[in-house]
Length: 113
Image (cartoon, rainbow, N blue to C red; front, side, top):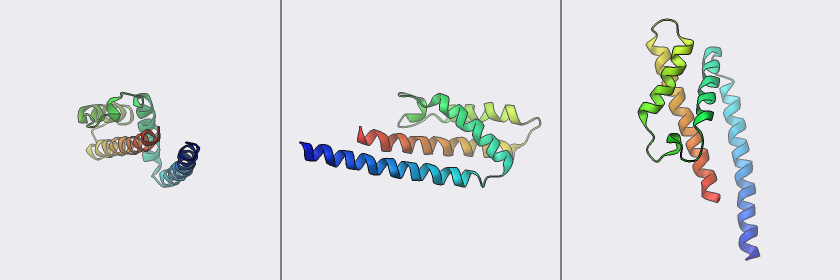
């Protein structure tokens, strides 16, 4: 029994290191975004923070596209003062990517608990 416990704890330590490295790498790459995209990304992360909870639509097997587009629309309305389809598409992609990052992190963590 102790052997199984020690093995599981070793896997959790490895996961924590991997998770930290992935997050540091992501933060580093986000710094390379253009200034406006970084500002928008902070807004996307804030909105996704509000939606990241157990049972959230974000973490469902098949997330709702309308929910993602709603988040993108909300952010787009805050940052755009005139019609700009390219900016709207960028925001939609950023929201979709943030969903993917958070869902992957959730699945990796859930696997161990």
